[in-house]
Image 1 (cartoon, rainbow, N blue to C red):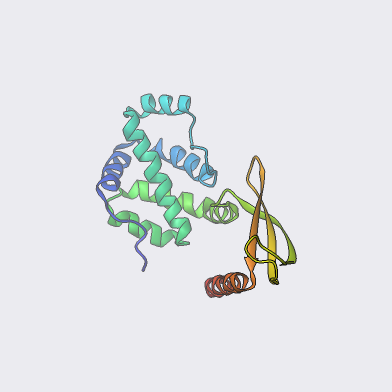
Image 2 (image 1 turned 45 degrees about the vertical axis):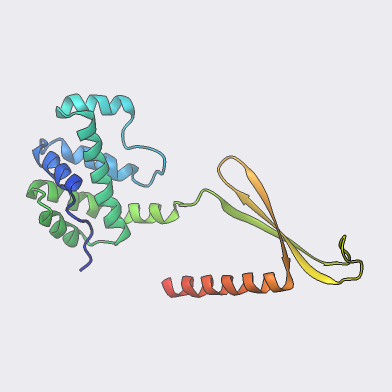
Length: 196
């Protein structure tokens, strides 16, 4: 069985804080975290909501951050390892989480787990995405030092896009450079095929 998380000092501290929380309040907090987990640059709660939570849960800001971050970490690990609810529950007990909080995680993971995994799969981890490839083949006939030469080359234009803008990246390859690049792409393809 894969170990989903290590019982580090910060995880132990977070477990202590979660165990001390009111059992009626933690399910709503965990539910909100799991529903916002797939959003890359967005926290589960706004700054105002976090301040209200600090008062309601009688927690300092750093402790609340630790609870929220650890809750998200546990759920991300469960998603990454495609953990079954029973396995998640077992490993949460092993790091010292109380039975009622374990039940909250297992119920939340049972309810939202499949959707979270699907949303995380569709989320891109890299901001730039290749949109289009243009190419052109040519022959370089001369240089400043040499007038008689015939060097074939390939010019690629990679059109990459992030959320705000589109960039064009130009790559110029000689025959030998293009062949080496092709071999690297073949290696990448082989590794991707092995993961499928």
